[in-house]
Image 1 (tube, one colour):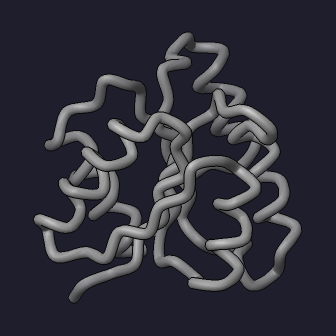
Image 2 (image 1 turned 45 degrees about the horizontal axis):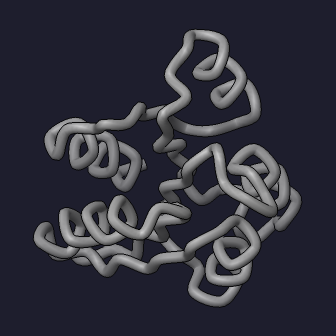
Length: 122
């Protein structure tokens, strides 16, 4: 069953590549170029899962996650960080904020799809 997945990523090439991988699996890929746009899209579209970068201008991924957790209709949406910040402390911080998973760039297609499918089941 196709699911709606929101990709919040400021790098256009990365955003397109992830969207294409998800579309090839039959999902609907929604995209946002920054955190503010991502929150607006999430509120409007109610995605089944959100993939979000951490380091973005205007509003970072941590602020996006906090804002979405304050929205009771989006609080339960699976949220996965997809970021270049891969230090152990970065991963701990992201998961500590309530992310369901943490992937580091560059991410393999297999790791991305495995994580997405795992969190869409719940």
